[in-house]
Amino acid sequence: MTTLAHYLNTHGKSTALNDVITTITDVGKTISQLLRKGALADILGEAGNQNVQGEDQKKLDVLANDLLLDALAQNRHCAGVASEELDDATPANIDGSLLVLFDPLDGSSNIDINMAVGTIFSILPYQRQGQVSENSDFLQAGNQQLAAGYLLYGTSTVLALTITDNVVMFSLDPDTNDYVLIEENVQIDADTSEYAINASNYRYWRAPMQQYIDELIAGKTGVRGRDFNTRWVAAMVGDVHRILCRGGLFTYPFDTKYANKAGKLRLMYEANPMSLLIERASGGATDAVNRILDIEPTDIHQRVPVVLGSKNEVEYIKNLHLNHTDK
Image (cartoon, rainbow, N blue to C red; front, side, top):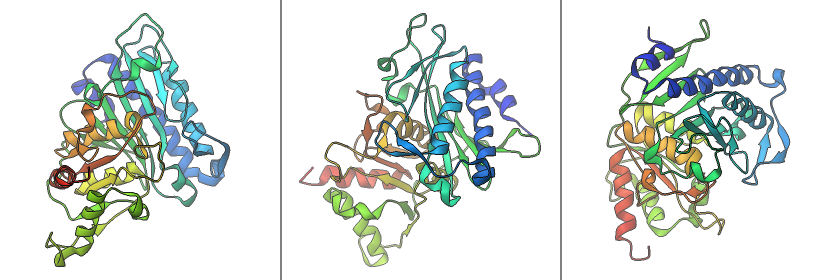
């Protein structure tokens, strides 16, 4: 039996990185316990305020954010922390060598109905040790990530992690409270017949994405010549986990629903860490055309369209966009 601690000791790049990952995953144990108690822990319902994105916060959104922020701020290797829930990054230890970004509770609208939610995290190098970290320090392309992963709180708590060139999965053992390795080299098939998309936004999509979904819906009678199935968890962490387990495509594409938003998902807190996981599992991740991990961020809360999963479908969507006359 390989525990997370043993894996980090044998595969980790540095003591600092191992220690920060351990801090995040230890907080994940606490969040998992709170979710198991549900209403008994008074974590359901609205917190009564909104986050920086203008979204109503759930009680556990706020609690998970505070738990992670407090724990990471006390970690001597962490120079700064950025959360999807807060306007600005929080400086931590000036001698730290790492920066951490997180979405404390992805899919929080699922909490009250007892469905899957998760914590997504990304770890970047800090370039200005000895100085107080600022928002600008976090503005690094996703290809600079030292590690990324998520904790999925479902029927069991699962950790997906990448610190080397592959993706591994651990399951939280409720008897020992240890994360135990369950998959050493996650791989995504290049082809798939499953896709996840919020079809209610169809009228707001660009023509190439509408064409793509029309082709999938046509199934055997259309140009693709086979049937496709729709799967939608309404939490990116759940949809990405399914893709890592059995392949598929997830997309939240560009739409015109909100003129000031390029997409719904955040580059730094969701798209970058998930893209690193997907690529290292042999999948693809783009904004429909460009590789997400190469995007140079301009704001810590920047939004981007996302297309990720089985490589051949990601490439198919890219070609539809490149070949369309009205780009």
